[in-house]
Amino acid sequence: RSRPHDKRVLVIGLGRFGSSLALELVAHGWEVLGMDSNPRLVQAFSESLTHTVVADGTDDEALRQIGAHEFTRAVVAIGTHLEESILAASLLVDMGVPHIWAKATSRRHGRILQQIGAHHVVLPEHDMGERVAHLVSGRMLDYVEIEEDFALGKTRAPREMIGRKLGETKVRTKHGITVVCIKRHGEQFTYATAETIPQKGDVIVVAGKTDDVEKFAEIA
Ligand code: ADP
Image 1 (cartoon, rainbow, N blue to C red):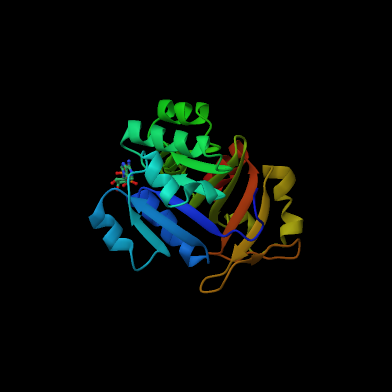
Image 2: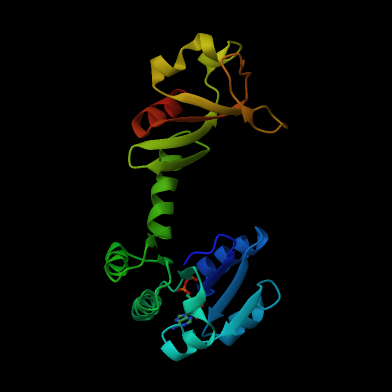
């Protein structure tokens, strides 16, 4: 059913999460139909989103009228209203929308969404909280966990790297991390190679096991 050139997304709920997501999609060339039961919000985004509609995402008839069943991708961005969120997601599942993302505000909420058949459940508050924890506790400038045990960390080049070719510093065997890219002050990121010589103040992005990235940031 998924058409390769279908660049349309239905977003139900235009709160902080839904509207940010919708605007980002539009900025990247996607067609977004934004739906919210609150007319004020719909009005606010009527210029910036491809299409907007005031409708109730828990109303089967309303969803059919806007052609929800014809979308390949839909996002249920209703967070705080648990019942609404679950009902909207289950209607989309019943309609056979092949890719449904749903925002959950708690792990229990996420579990229910998963069980009724939402394909991707996101927990923005939980995820962001965990991510920021790594920034607060260490010296990292940014941190992304790719999977349970693998992460990318952005940090300053530690002293032991300065003025030496990356290939000679043996950071991979010593610290278990790989320097992926590097950025000199005022310049853009470039890929790091064995020949790259970091200078004082350079920012690097390293990849590796979560613990190794964490430990590496301590010495940076
Ligand atoms: P956020 O934290 O992202 O701001 P909220 O849960 O506060 O998320 O906002 C969700 C949005 O979803 C609100 O704008 C609300 O009006 C909308 N919403 C809630 N229930 C429905 C529904 N049944 N149909 C359509 N939109 C809804």
